[in-house]
Length: 71
Image (tube, rainbow, N blue to C red; front, side, top):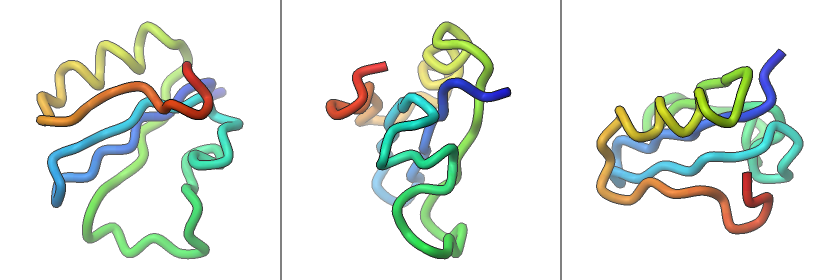
């Protein structure tokens, strides 16, 4: 079961780390009814440590924790 998600937006070279139940994450579904997959992707992780490690490895210019859910 995923407790944390990382959203990677390669178009804007940014990403956010979320708790699974964050309203912006919605268990990896985001806020839009459909995701075209053109700009980014969601990746789920079973722990905070795994999510932050993966986010660090993505090497995006603007990667940080969500200010709303503060994982």
